[in-house]
Length: 592
Image (tube, rainbow, N blue to C red; front, side, top):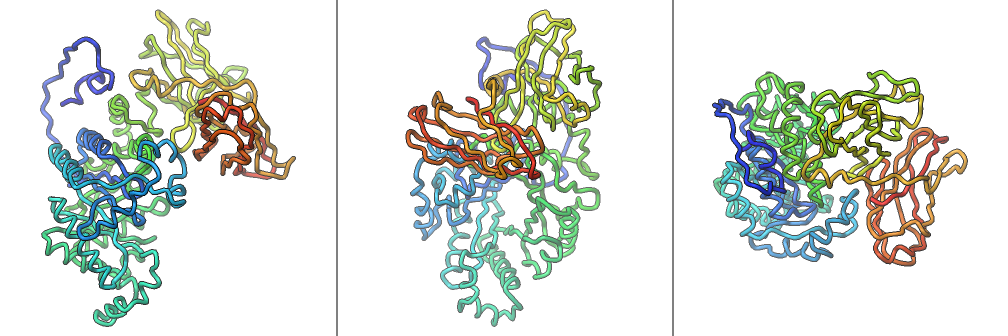
């Protein structure tokens, strides 16, 4: 019912005066196609604070996502205390800094930072786990714990697996738990051990993969003795590889959709698993952009297809949001759609209505332009004689700040807002990093009593008439005002690069005098010929202050300088990934 009320109800900044709102009296009859609509929260690599989990549960309830699947360990990090094994949770308490201290430093290639020996966060206490479960239950959301255990059959390994099941059964009151069997870091030694050889002989198993299936089956039976039903993940590049070693009898199968590859393989494996009588969850269903990797059509919707799942994990809440949304919105829609699968055109209309509410509550997604007034493909619009693009704002224009967001192959030099053919607002290009790349935007101001409004776009090159791209125009409100604070483009580049002239794809940028204030800077690569993106950024010979770099994919690189770095002497080295041996371009540096 809350979704029927205005956005002000959801915004962090509430109106100063009391407001009276009303909603239409309606009757709604609906039911989901899928029993489970699952949001995956990966707390294994990067600890996610309890407060953010509760926030996610509120958002899940709004979108009728009814299962939180909570990964609680990865790569030796255990985020919950395991009965009889306090040393597991204690092993990650030596993280160098707290979550709040660490969070700003983990943008970009987070996994590499983790692998470099910087464990992130800590563990959940039993009280925190119980609070999350109770909070979810109050919102009709089921919490399914998920852990990974090593593919190991020695007596001490089997004892640990039993203790893990005991802990999950004690802490989580629901019917289902998930235990995935993953390769041990020292798998070769484990496979040569006496426990493995004994199982192979006693059970007449043909090889290692058959032993893995046997172990999964034993975990199914062990969970049943604890009055739990077991979910376990099956991996493989195609249906044949997934099914060849057999399947654990009685298990609910978690079937991940590959990020790359033919979706037909997943569909085939799904059909075969259902024929074998397994309940199935299809996971990793939605990509970061909110698109379905697999649109389940009529014929695959039947009782043993229990649910759909999507989700992610990250060190920073804004990055987590960028990966979870709009994926979660697409998941919710797919889980409620009819027998013929998700209708993308109908869904896009509903998603545009949902977006303002999601943004008003502080969630950020690099894939969804906020509350777009319109979105258009500009290669289909007529150009003026000088190559500029102009279009009228015919509906919905109101006084106040607005932004134009672009996704374009050709660079845009500036955007102007005209009223009665007179320029009333003009901005050069601004950009902001969003965790993976650059969002290009222009912040304009719509004046009072303006008529005949028109937007004019000037490209870097006059021959860009046939270039492809899209524009989205929206008015700003609430937190979005801060999200799109303007960063002016500098007057000139700080360096040039030319692969053909230097026979080198590395740009060396002396830092003397460039960092005039502490804070965040954006290093931007702007190709003038061909194509390029940032491959790697390193700092050399820094003698004063502290500089940190954060690897954002694409054309932007974030650089942080402390107060002492204003006098820093050193070199910023940028390794480029280019398309050919004669690409060239510029390097721009500006305060974020």
